[in-house]
Amino acid sequence: MVSNSYFTPSPIVRSKSSMNILTSTNNKNNETSRGLIQTWPCNVQLSRYQSLDHPSNYYNYARKCIYPRHSETMWNLVNKAAIQNASHERAEAEELRLQSWQKIQQVNRQTKNRQTEVTNKLRERVEEINHWKNELKTEIHLNEEEQERLKTNIQLLNCNKEYIKKPLEIAEECLANREQRQGIDEVKDIVERALSKEVQTVNKGIDLINKLIDKADIQLKLLRSTQHDLQKDASDKEHAYKIDDHLFTLCNSSTNIALYDGIEYIDNTRSIPVSWMKYTQENLIRSQNQRSASENLREK
Image (cartoon, rainbow, N blue to C red):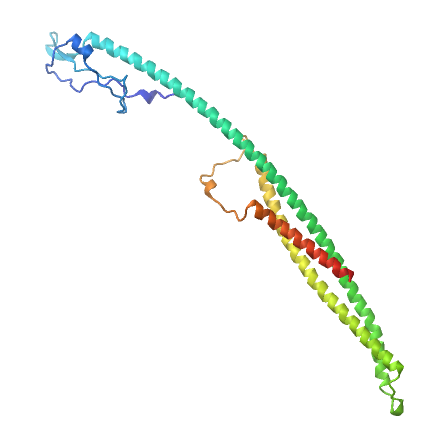
């Protein structure tokens, strides 16, 4: 719909000559044949916008004064031109309205198609994030279970170390008491050799247990490190999942929706889909490798 002020000022431009000065006489043939000035209200020239020719001056006997007057032919011509102009303007307005409506429908279709496309991509993205989030949670659970088993194994190693210390203390006590022998009785007999071998064997066992405990402690730290990476990745996935899942549920009638001018030009991304997936896969593989190493260590 075109506003009422669209056609103002009037396209009929009057002559600047309105003074009481005698000009050329009224000539019908001259009026109809003379080319009329083509002027648009906004100074854009169009074929159907015409102006008046210079009016002729007439003497008014009642007022005893000269007044400019247009001819009846010119009056009819101007009215006819005004009607034609109004008809053209109405046709143009109707055409503009139709084109605007068609453009609105086209933009609506494009917007709807784009929204459908983005919604489908959001659905795929949400499903992908949820998949990797579940994979991370599963691996975190397996990692925690392996840590508990490794802790139990470390406790058993410490208990075994304390258990075999008793025979070591007894063997060392026996050797210390046998050092109290005097003279010819200080014999390196089979008993002393057996006690010495027992002490050496127990010490080797303790050293082996200590090495296993040290390796288990290191492996436990590695498991905790991978667990931390998994938890951080899973937390980021959970945050991204909540955002995209909320966006997936939005529609044109949703509340609290605002425009953010220029937001499409802001890019704070740190990865691409390939590197994003590769990062999670590397975290999972690293945790799986550490769990496998922990299982091998427990089996020794």
